[in-house]
Image 1 (cartoon, rainbow, N blue to C red):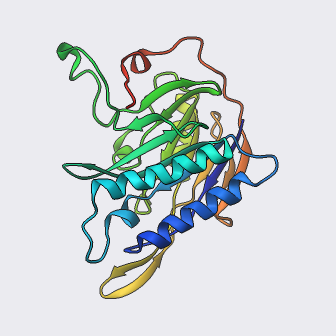
Image 2: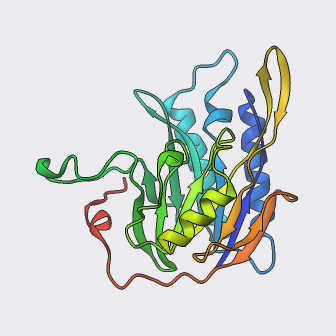
Length: 250
């Protein structure tokens, strides 16, 4: 399968510029030949949740997801991305959209399970599900760095929409984790512009996004380009695991 990892320049405190930047890289990635089957975007939480003089509403959070859902349907491509979720208070989440624009995976997952199993899966666990292109796992980068390895429930591909601040997620850490888990990894990180530091507007350089094989080889990184492509061989799982059986994407 062909994958595109994108590193848009997100404008801190400017929702319209950030949304435009995200849509720009989606269109440019989708227009490439051969076209990707999966586009991985970064965690856009920071850029979309800090709006000058505006309280971010549930409708604004939903609107961003719906915007990318229309893009996924228009281009017939899977899209994974991080975004703010309004669940009483704002929190970081991630969504994987299928080529019809429907939510196929959400992190944190909404799951139905008996009360006795309520503590069986940590809120920070990966969400995992079989797709027609293989078994995929999804999560954000917020608590990933503390993990010594990827517990991805037999997935062949781990997808990480990462926050710009996740500089601790070095390629060395990710390639080592990919090797030990026997799982390919796609991580996307954005460049954030306009963040204030000590009264000055700064342009923060991210840790590179990358496409990493299950053997720990880096096929492509966003060191020198805001969109990179690579081919990955992901074998489908013969049977779904317990997370797919319990998961309910609404």
